[in-house]
Length: 494
Image 1 (cartoon, rainbow, N blue to C red):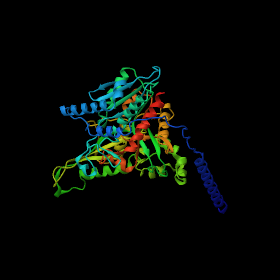
Image 2: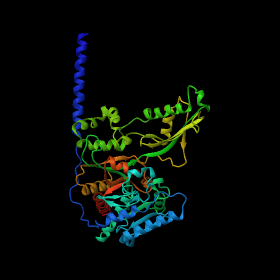
Image 3: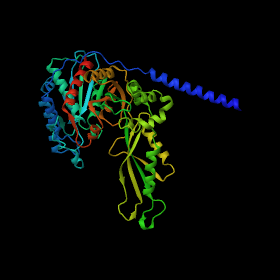
Image 4: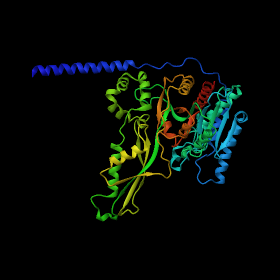
């Protein structure tokens, strides 16, 4: 017995030594990606006028359309006039057409018709500046103020900053006499905030009818971040190579309605509360998969030693590490399908038990799940409760996750090089998973690869202003947005 115990202890020591050696070897095997050499293309543009042109665009409240009114039409015509006045060379040289009354498609013909075009897209609509956010705004949401080194207004980042940045870049390149070898398409949708059905989707359908297929598309997506990835303080560029899907479901609990003075052991509200708790605690555990895995592994050599060791050894540590990373505001939502209760429907009388209560749950679906699998998982989690799970069709289309696009394509590398040359302190550019829905997904029918990158440097505070209060962009950041798009156009179109 004593000999057996000695052998077991020795085996454990050897095994622990093998595991430790394996972990060290794996950690050392990750190498930094070489940063592209060379300087950015020379580019001169109107740095004094550009912030005012964006501010002018922010003053026009292009909020989502309801039933079309003369007022809506006037707002969008005013915005189109603003673009035409702000960018005269663009409107002189490029072909422009209006799609679905309000969206815009520009075509900059290249000299080589044998090359597939590239497409840059952004959206012109913005969410309203709601009254309950008033205290969060230093200036009114559609003031378009330039103050304290910032351009203030709804849409500064999401997403007029990108749309105007693209047009500023093209205007400057035209002024410099640049002629693209590859045709460039610019697509600006008017209804991204409500799904892009009448904007980006119609533009994509139009391109498909014309048999125009692009080699790659770049729209809004992930950002430049600093200090938002565990174990890494240096700036990182994150390019979305996939996008989560989305859907709404309704969890419904029913019971006999009666006076609250005759309280039963179980109520519809109590059953529903149990279902929500289970949904939050049991469904969709965090997983390090797909683009998030690829991005983290690319960042291993840049992380502090402790985090580097952990991420390099996911074969052993994935479950506890995924649980820890799920607390990260930048990475948490990219590790799982998320299910967030958004709207509750309680009873109508304070002293009566309701016969039916329900909650609307918004889901963002990870690439390894699907709408069908998500519904089945939720039904499984609440299977022993008297809960009906209903897919909500009105108000929002159910959309599956997009394809996962290549991080090895010429398009990805062109974006990566443009980031490094525009933002030289960025240590790495990595693929990632875009967790919010954009209208870029509609271009998957006409493009080999669809990427999501919004060239703004953001932190947690900045991210909270998007669809929140106090949205703004620093003037110096916006000027770099313009430089990025000019650099990307040169690299992608030559």
